[in-house]
Image 1 (cartoon, helix red, strand yellow):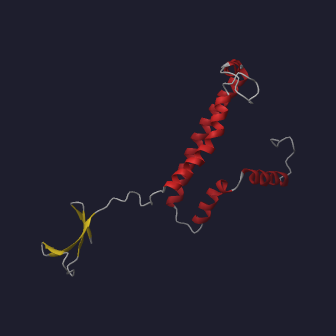
Image 2 (cartoon, helix red, strand yellow):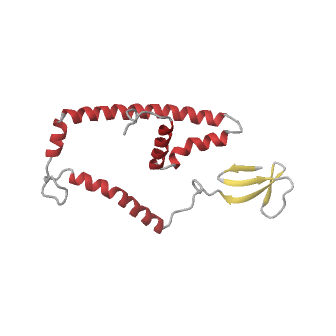
Length: 173
């Protein structure tokens, strides 16, 4: 049995003997020293790993930063910066069709997040409580959309809808 007391790890064993053992209330106790906090059990990252991660994040966010910077460009072409201007944002917010599309996108995004969170939570709770033989297959099917690239999924869905003999007017293309 392991007992933690005063930040020390102690093993209580009535059969234990040795120089590190001492008696407490008729039970021999062996002390192993101070308990070390190792955190989450993960190894420490090296300097190389930190530099590599920094380069990856820099390369991931560099295109986003360039787009944001060039969105304030005065020129129509994003070839070189000619000056700071808010004219493109003025035109964007003055266009009622763009504002309607923005509102529709926000409504659709919030609704899809709420529905996905509810379905995902119900699915996770359901999968954690069932003990069927097919539980492994259900877990695999639930992560399948993450593992299949979108282009292959699109091709499979196109073939599936073609097999259903849907008229071409029903397809979103």
